Image: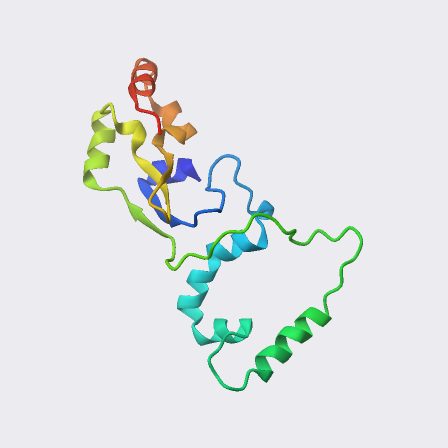
Length: 162
């Protein structure tokens, strides 16, 4: 995914803190239920609104019996078989109040890439909800391969570390 972000000059903003960021080792299937929820719940909450809240039994109506009955029915029908490969409990990730979004790089970063400025390696590709840059251009294998050989050592050696 980092290579696609580099090739299209995009950056992911508000990646949920506590969820492993996209990269070479990212495995969606390895995420805990909490981490998966942190990724999708804000989007679902905004776009489904009351339907999403009702499905969780969180609607504000006085009569929660229907939502509770749906939840109970879902739980009742699920059994754990030996060898079941369902989601395992894992790291807890806090559900963010913002939806992750993808935006184009600012013109200054595009210009830095074109001019192969010394700080080009630090162009952010993924920024988490705490504002921390978790992946930069130097993490993209395609970016490294695209660099002319004489620039690789110069740019990578002079780039400040995160």
